[in-house]
Length: 118
Length: 111
View 1 (cartoon, chains in turn red, purple):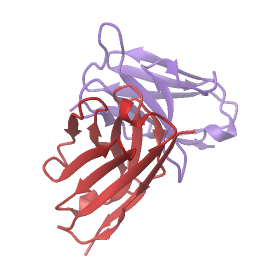
View 2 (cartoon, helix red, strand yellow):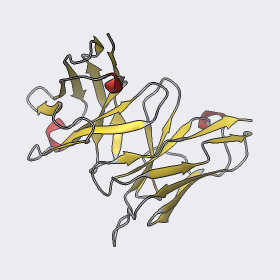
View 3 (cartoon, one colour):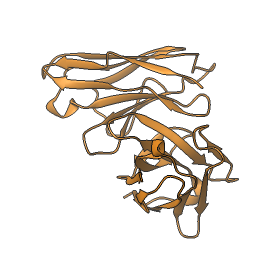
View 4 (cartoon, chains in turn blue, green):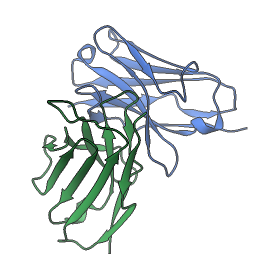
């Protein structure tokens, strides 16, 4: 059974940093691209970042480019998102998603809530 | 980036009725062979669930009452006869050009 479990969310002041983690199980992690998708309270979905499974190519939304860094540790089956220079508009539920076929997300975690407020 | 516009924002229907949801892209999301359009369902307090991919292919375990159509810039998700568990928010998403983008969602609510 595929499981994605996010952690690391919390309340942070503007300008602060957080590191999100996503522990994956039930599939061959290294073979798949993985993404972080966020959802602001009561709002829609935004794909924040993606990392390929093969050559670890990374992609970022313009809204987070230069502030967020996606990475993965295939030996630990874990996906990460380092978030720096956080802003109020980064407040959202952050989902980890398994990418079945380059943008087709077949499994999602339950999300970790990030709140940016002073 | 490709903008997806979904309509209507809210659809009020009764169980057993047919639901027709629309998604329009600001530019084509189809290539010669594939249409890079995906649909998800999201219920309150839950993560999105993959429904349809490549515009018209049902994901694993999705009932046959769900169908998708369209190409280029105009797409439709149809639920032929609404079941109580189908009342939710539906999002379209394009995976033609990065950044993958989502529509703003259509809420299907009980009338």
